[in-house]
Length: 305
Ligand SMILES: Cc1cc2nc3c(=O)[nH]c(=O)nc-3n(C[C@H](O)[C@H](O)[C@H](O)COP(=O)(O)OP(=O)(O)OC[C@H]3O[C@@H](n4cnc5c(N)ncnc54)[C@H](O)[C@@H]3O)c2cc1C
Image (cartoon, rainbow, N blue to C red):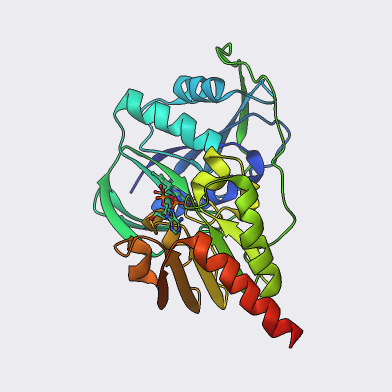
């Protein structure tokens, strides 16, 4: 199948998967690379043209503008699965009415379209779609490897559109330094904790069990009571400890799907119908403010004797 492909190589170092994807889509893919970095070598099979935009660090709207300027009836538009390139592809897809698939990790050409597979539910399942072309795709890291060639592509330059957004500041995330992905015991803190100071109970329990403290999304994202590296869930960390104790956590799928591989789950919740109990091996239906001081005291006594 003869297909025209536009690869958004942003950031340029992770464009290889996207080039590999294009080659896999068709033996006769004719590939144009759009990049913001000149001087990169793109000697890969099918790469005919490299368009270098004269902007070092584009804002998402500039990236989308560049993509729109370059797009001309390409059958496939593909980029790495980074936030900015996904943002730009989504804007182009909406504008040109293209179906769009994110984080694709498998691809089979079929008829005049493609079969593409992408993970769902935090990687616990895969969905395969058939799509006609034209369509847009972002590809999962290391899913496709490009074949190189001796052919040197033509290089063109392109002016970047003016930005309507301004990047005002960049703030580094705060980290606690504790790696909950490696911990053998994780104590999970949820909205059942009434105030930040009460997390000290979870920290004490974790200390007594040689474990670490993790949490649900609201504890870090909404309340800022714990740093982001404690966040368990589809948008946080995935954990597989020997013991996970979600305490005052309702057990939403976005949280539990990232903890379900724990060897043993013991939940603490005062509501016996909380969904967390459906995913637990054992459960305490109790007010955490009653259980935790008693449990901590018991463990301390055990350590002393
Ligand atoms: C796109 C998307 C992505 C998301 N990603 C994540 C994610 O990565 N991680 C994540 O955690 N969430 C995520 N969420 C949010 C998720 O849906 C839930 O809203 C969140 O997990 C709820 O947090 P919680 O269980 O701490 O709070 P709540 O749902 O408010 O639950 C609090 C629980 O505490 C219990 N409780 C209250 N007081 C006590 C007490 N004194 N003693 C004992 N139990 C008590 C209550 O019965 C209740 O079950 C996501 C949501 C969306 C839409």
